Length: 340
Image (cartoon, rainbow, N blue to C red; front, side, top):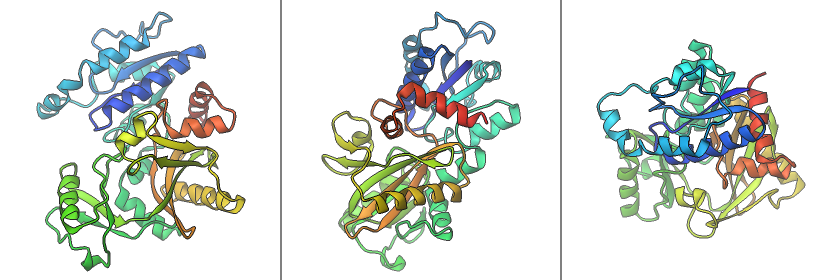
């Protein structure tokens, strides 16, 4: 198959997206696919859609080319550069399918998916509506409540509104995070009023809407859902702090156990909540849902990831491995379920 692996973009997760895309592209080429890595925002001026999918393609060179634009992102945004880079649409239209290795803003929020729907371009992952819903943590929380998927108590806060915890019946410590961010960028766990006020300011530096929710102390888990089936649960135990950006992507900073050590009943319950949450957010094809379990055994669904990371330390590949599926198998599986 001719496959464009779309990565990069303009989000705070640009770097991780390029890592994901590089790994996916190499895996697909190892299986004989004519896969190419393309930065969605900068594209390639030298890429002829009729000649791009060749056996001589150098994935590492393509990744280095994408990274060469890293310092230009902010300036290009300020200058009003169009989101789709040079030849990106033509390359995607020439491909049999586009593997979305994008993360964060304008990758997981449904905008790319909606554009591709209008252009008749096939892509991996959920459609535009589910992607948009899941990207909004405030809306996701409301849908979890409405569909009886347990989730931490909390509230949505907009710039200029009263930030008082007491007004919402909450106390410290709590969790403060941007409403539509990813990879735990901008997420903090303040324990004092001073820390809380600083956390709100920091979260608002990323977005104009943030989420404040109760802090659940306990064990953290993640559950992949692929084609409506929950994958083995993985437990995430950071050596220091919580599962923030550094602990997600720095090798050796987190102990990850898959399958997680849980009772049969706990495993089945969490997997059931994952599938239920997946459906509540109108997701399809595949995704990953994150959970906390309090010390008394109560489960709380935190959020969903519609384009899970595909780096060497990412969670979904580890869950697939527990099923006997290697990385390349998983990449082909995600294409297959999305192409149905």
